[in-house]
Image (cartoon, helix red, strand yellow):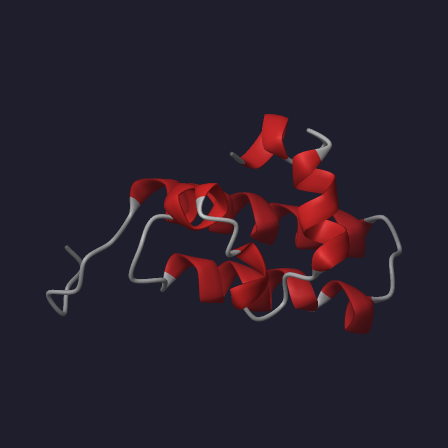
Length: 86
């Protein structure tokens, strides 16, 4: 539960932290900040989801989350992101 009494999912918060870190690394490395800004936005969206990210992935509904497209889902299915995030 968060301070407002909402349900929080540990895995969602963990993934959101990793996405925020990815943003910071990209910006420090010289990646265009306007392009990298999608990662903290996605982090916020995932951390505020009302259900666990793993359940969403298992149900094949990742593209329902704003900011996650078919390319990201394809990376997850290939195991690229799965080792890190799921």
